[in-house]
Length: 526
Image (cartoon, rainbow, N blue to C red; front, top):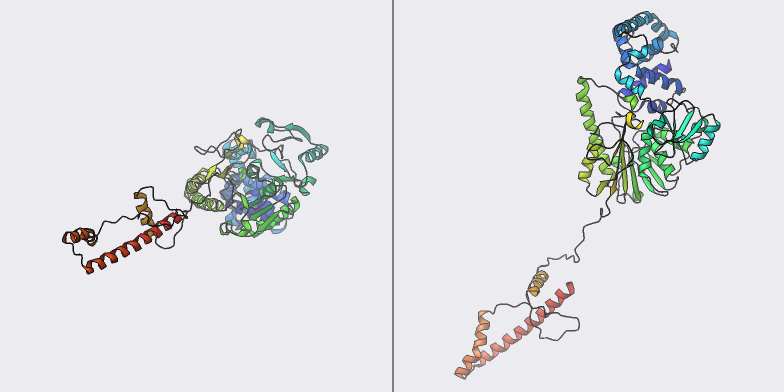
C-alpha cells in the first residue's frame, strides 16, 4: 500500500505546482522508483477519465478516500496491471470493482470507442503525439563523449553520428545520435530507460532534457571562474556548469529547500563535482558586496516558476480557476523580477543567464523587459541564430522551446551582459573643498574677466602686480586723488592732510599684497 500512498502524495504536490513529476518522484527517495514513476505518470495521463469514473460511482463518499489516492487505486484496478496491495485496501477496491467497470463501459459506449486510450482528452493525445526523445548529457567531469559513445555501442546501441536537422531526432529503438546544437548531448528514442544503466549509476551520464541544458551551455563560464547558481536544486544545471568550467574555480549554489539540497548533494557527489559550495539560503538574502563573492562574474538564475512548459504538468485550467492562475502568475513574476534585479548587483558581474520552464510571457519576456528598464547598464545577447523558436517581439534575442518546434519541453532563456562602459562611477570633481569655496570661486570668476596677461608663476614674487580685483574707487579715494591739485592751488598743504595721504598709501600697499596672495591661491587650485 506504500506505493499508492506515495504516488497520491506526489500527485498532490504536482497539482500544487511544487515541481515536475520526475523530480518529485526521485526526491521522494522511495525504495522502488521505477514502478512509482510509471504509476504516477500513467495515473496523471488518465486523470480526467479516472475522476469521471470516481465521481459517477460515488467512490469517495463510500470509502472516505482522497481523490488522488482513489485515482491511483482505480487506475491499477481497471486500466493498469492489477492491484499491487493486499489486506483491507484490496478487499475494499474489489468490493467496488463491478460498479467501477460498469461506469467505464458506459463511457466507452457514449463516446463510441473501444480502447481506454481513446477516452483521453485532445490535449493529452497531443502530448502523446509529441512524445519527446530521451536526452542524455555526457558528464565530462568523469568521461568524454567519445568514451561514452563507444561504451553505448558495445552495449548494443547503434550510433548514427551527429544530427543535422530536427527530423533526425525521430529514432527507432536502440539507435542514437549526437545533438545538432549541444555536442555533449546524446539523443535516444522516447522512453529509453537508463535508470538502471551502469553509466547513469556511475555518474558518467545525466538524464536531462535538452532545453534544461541551454542555460549553462549559453552562459559558458571559463575554467577557474567564480559562479553563482541562484536557485540550484535539484542540481542538473549545477553539475553542467561544473563540467563546462572543468571542475575548477568556485561554484556557489543556493536553495531554500533543505530536502532538495540534500538530494542535490548526492547527485553532485555521484557526478564527481568538487568545485561547489552548497548553501541552504534564500538567494535574495545573499549580500552581493560580501568579500566572499567579490570575484563572481557569472550567475545562472532559474527561479521558481509555473512549470507550464513541462509536458507532464500541462493543465487546462477551467474558467473558474483562471483568476487563481492569473494571481499566481503575477506573484511569480514579481518574485522572478526581484531575483533578476538582485542577481545583477554583484559588482564584477559580466553575464547572467535567466531561464524558466514556463510558456507564459508574463514570467519570461515580461520579467526581462522590466529588468532591463531598471538596469540600463545591461543588455541582451543574441543567442543561437540557428535556433528555430525565438523570444516574443521585441525580445527576439532570447530563446523559446516547445515540443513541436524544438522537440523539448517548453522553456525560455535570456542572456544579459554588462555594457562595456557600464559600472563606471561618475567622474569625481578634480578638487573637493570642504569649506565653502566662496572666496576662491569669486577670485576665479573675477580673474577670468581680466586681461589674460595676469599669470603668476612660482618664480614671480616681485610686487607690485596689478590687482585682479578692480574695485570701483570709493568716495574718500576720489577726494584723496584730487587733494594734491587743491593743495597746489592753495600752496599750503596742511600737516594733517600729509599724514592722511601716508596712511592711505600704506593701506593700498597692504591691499596689493593681499591680492597677490589671492591670485597665487587661485593659480595653485587651478
